[in-house]
Length: 218
Length: 64
View (spheres, rainbow over the protein chains, first blue to last red):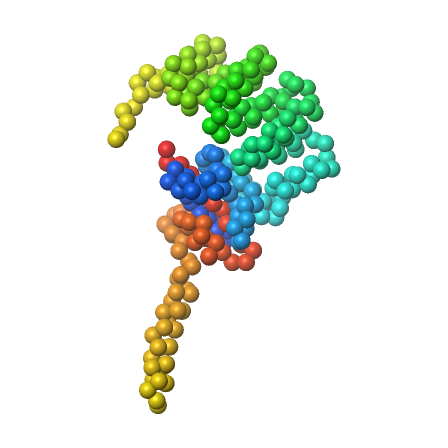
């Protein structure tokens, strides 16, 4: 990303770039409530948190999103303003996701619930919102609640893509909890249930890793 | 020329260039590596270097 010619030019002429290793600079990570990597937080010249980009984006899309945010387009403030006059579940979902990635759990939960309440309980946006909530709990370290949410979701969304997604996340949460037995059983169940899934290979790798954990360097 | 005037001139001669050098280099602590976007390693350094209305992108990454 940061070796792309356009990106180099952008950060030479348009905006300043700060690169921080979140595992080392944990204070700054906590200050900006970063819950995953990579996360890019856009600040104005007074240091105010404008908005953030979560995950990887193609270089052109990445810089354009930063420009849009700097112009007040697509920011949380912008979406909240629009939500005041539009009844749009997609918009509510976007707002919930933005709160989620700011670790503003109460607000995120409220907006996810708004998406679910405004539609059918098992439609696509409700599924995404249920996933969003369960993912939010595990990011906050509330693994038990996250696990319960994913298990319940797999039941409620039987036969849909959301059941499969909830099942793989169930295994991932067990893994994060360092419950090796639970994680191995959940990954095994996933492989047997969805042999054709694109996540089946990932599940197999995780089982191997759990059976033969890499030696810890003291 | 009095002794105090000489001292004043000497002081200015020493400190003005130092102050100028600090003004020129003190805020621009960006790391510039060949073939990579220039970057700062702290938010404070970037805030000190940012001009009015200039935005700062803070990328949090992990080497895990």
